[in-house]
Image 1: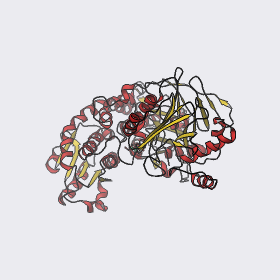
Image 2: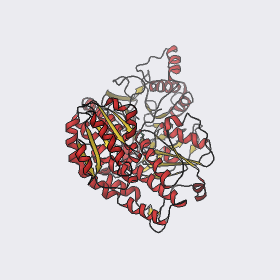
Image 3: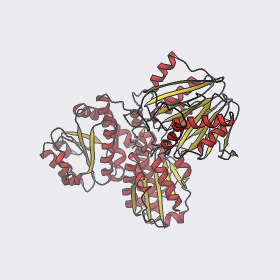
Image 4: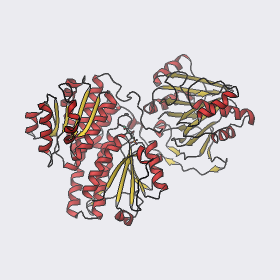
Length: 611
Ligand code: F6R
């Protein structure tokens, strides 16, 4: 959450910072601000609202200079207004700071500083950092690096920081503890960002900064220090995101573009990983030896939000095909629980961003206890990808819409391949393996055909977009999808929605059924089809409108449901990957019709890097 961009070089900083902020706006959009440095002067501009508001302000009052830092905020401490917008200045105006994370002891520090006569402007935790650095700077007679180091020693919590000062107007300093930070290396110019996507088109060489590191940047030089001020080796990596991948192209919203990318992203998730010769899947980066995997007696899948729903599908997949008991845990709960876990348990973190604070903490806790850990992750070089013992990248490209879509289908596909791989180590026959490979290979085409339901879904959205409540019901593989469909609708259209296993409905949720509450039934084409059909009848009998998502050729649904969305037939275990497509489109169109900001829903931000 929150986006940071910093620049030092020989070009004007303002347009570079603004371009980076536009790319990071999905990280938080409560306010935006920049500060640039010329000579001994800091030029600070900040505004509540979107980056567009800041751009308007800069149109009236440009920020000159070739060094600057900037921020787009997801509010933690204090409401979203101009004063609480970053950057924050010290009282004497010499130091400016932008910050991503939470300073847990800020209230104590603030009281101490106020007792010493320091006046604060904002309600934020970040302002404390600026005040502390300025005090140290005055004491140290202008050594900004030392002043930052001394300040960091006083902070408890998490931070990705960028700092500039009038005292050393050619220096940009970054620091990281628990919140992501990337350093970009250019030709006589250097960058700092909370997310590599801010650097698309600017540089292809990056350093993913580790915790407890300071970055010291000037136009001509860069290096990393540890907190003892010793230089540390940095691992420079190639960063080759194509600028086109991060644009909306001809689509009105990123979310729609990402829904439409799914045939391709599914292909990318499987590329080079399915092997007919072994009738199995191959993964390059698991870093666990075959014996360790064979010995696995339990797998814990941990994740948040949509990734948690992918994990729930993973539970069905791994238990059915690899016959290994699986538990799925919300990362936010798992990190604080102390479940008994034996030596042969593998912990797998599932995450699009690789930066979700709770998932990262769950990973660290698992490692601390000595469990082998894997990550199923999209963002290359992210904290979780780097810290897990091994893992699998999704290769889905940047996901910018705040509502996760293509990452979900790639996660489930990867889990299906993992189930195949683990299953082949145990009891799955070569023939079963080959069947699964054939079915997996058909996924991109099935997804392409599933997108043909778009017009039908749009018509349904037009009919129901003004309801206040909605139920999503499914069984077995489609139960996690009911949860995911409800989450998609809630988060972007602000309609209250609940997902349930279809048969659970009679134990409570059926009380919600009325003529204004549509129920979306996800019709499993497996052994429970008739059971789900009975549940559908029960809702109809109580006057509830029913939308059925079913496969082509199902004539029964058409006679009973008010609306039917047809999908191509897919094997049961792959249905979640296909059936999620109309649910994503439904949420999308309902949100558009209700006038919601689809790509930047209220109160949300992509990548939840605070607890
Ligand atoms: C919902 C959504 C969130 C994320 C969750 C986990 O559409 O995007 O629920 O799925 O914040 O994020 P990652 O996968 O980045 O760990």
